[in-house]
Length: 112
Length: 115
Image 1 (cartoon, helix red, strand yellow):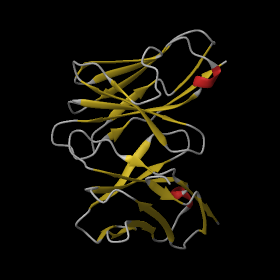
Image 2 (cartoon, chains in turn cyan, yellow):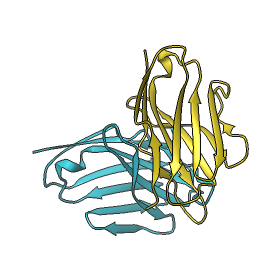
Image 3 (tube, each protein chain N blue to C red):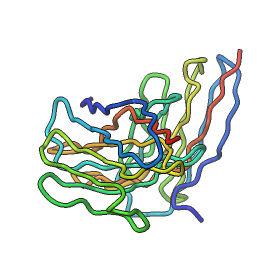
Image 4 (tube, each protein chain N blue to C red):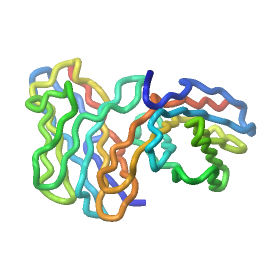
């Protein structure tokens, strides 16, 4: 199987919460990342969490990490149409030689 | 966060010609730059890693003579797709990291279409 797995699609109604899930296999990962890619654009780092943390909250974003199960999730509260994008989960060791391993991305579709 | 600028954002070229894509770190020194390729509905595939002043390290299956990477300065890396073919059409993204950064910053990507 792939090193980082995530579901390909998620559809939510505007105003609802979105939860995007990700599983990874490398237990030595130090950093877990969430990136957002809007159509035709590069990746934007949304947030990241250290592997010794369980949760990180940043405004509408909540990241939960279950290190035992190697499960990472991104919750977007009050999802807006502008949140429609592809969200990539990535894991890595961080530092100057940063080479993350990416999942295939979850396409989030927000409809009115 | 730090800014990485990639140019051009879109390019269309004829089959058999070469195309150069630039990746610049605008406000930090990028000791390491990465080049990725993204196929439709797929994840990013790392093509190569380049450290300033040294030869790039290519991932398995990536032809170094076809995808020429130069990282001559701490703020600029270039990817040249030589003798491009339609199957080279893709979205190419660079990222850069350096100094005390704990993450890499991505360029906005280049959509290459070979006709």
